Length: 617
Image (cartoon, rainbow, N blue to C red):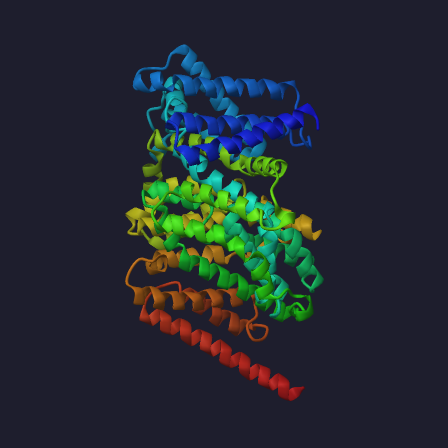
């Protein structure tokens, strides 16, 4: 191994160990913890990621090493001098403070350009320019403008910008669960979850696709990244679907979409779920409980759409002879469910997610000792720690760059200004405000990752939705869900591209088909706003009934998108299913009756048509 590669591995292992140590023995002061998190991220990004898109592989030149040294200087200065700078809050930064702040901001921008692309980096640059030149902008967005000293003080010499709450949540909660996901995968858990899904649903129509849905949901919840989930499970499920008759781009699309499901599935939801709890100021357990019914609706939608796709294309289930026995699977690998059960227990008991994460990592290591082929030697533990650090690298850089954007929105009070503009543009009509948010989410999804899109959108739009009467939890869930479509929204749809490469399919066709299948991710969130009981708000009988009607709405929408129910849909069927899906978004007896009636009429018409076809045959 080259010295360069060895250095990367050592730093990556140290990165994981530092935050495992912190979770085990207690938090360091906030500026130390957040500073180290960003510092490791900058160093690894400069060592691993190329300077230019035309470069491939690990390209480390003199420039990269210089940037590594500068990152150590800039962030190290912040860690050492934070106490003095904090005590001097309100007083202009000294010349060395200002220089180090500007240096660190530039380093974060460059790291973001390398790891997450130009879109988010460009937004951060525009935000900084807006903070300085705001006095030149006419209208509602105008402000008095801030000096370079004030901007740098807010972005660097505080726990607001680069080293703000986003870095805190990522370093204390999310990073640990990313490491846990890699641990359980390398301990043999990935194989277990895929076999379990095949054993339970593989025999049904389109069984290969059904297995992809369940295995991706289970693994996605643990891994915390839909793109990583696509790569890990897709390497098995996509060839399996193609072998059973799914078209290549369809198999890729199914995997890309269902890999998002893990972000919705408790107990370990996506990174944005942890941020949601921090931003609203509620325990993470409340977010988990609120996410139960929505996760069920998403899984039902995906299973139903995959089933309809298979029925339309006459794709059978996996032959029983090729399926593992469910009891054998549980007997040989069922212990991999224990870390998930432990996480649920610890979080339900009121302890922090970081404690749950560290306990799950420890238990997974012990479980790896059960089977000889899965046992983790020192070398294997080291490589797993390094893999976990690299898997969390994009998240860490995102924490720094999004910190700049969020702070840049907060400094001139842009969030409240934008909130007023949304209300004005929508004329105070809630459905229009939701559509504006959805459109913004769609376009943001073309250029940034899910967590970035959520943070930016929720900062700008949640206050507006809240002022229009939407419960704050529902407003955040609406943005959380709509931002998830980022990874399958062409032309920048990372999960779809990964799936397309695994399927050897056309990336554009895969992206378009995945977007079509995934539109329920835009449909379901409207229910959160108009039927808040789906988030556990209200009495049990209301939650139960509304969950049932929402399920019918989701199934109607799935049949509408697949243009198939019992037979291929005709225009009248599509119209009725559209009416049902629309009516069941809302709460109320009249809309429920309309939805039920439309569904019943479609079923009746298609049964009559099938009978005629059978008689004619």
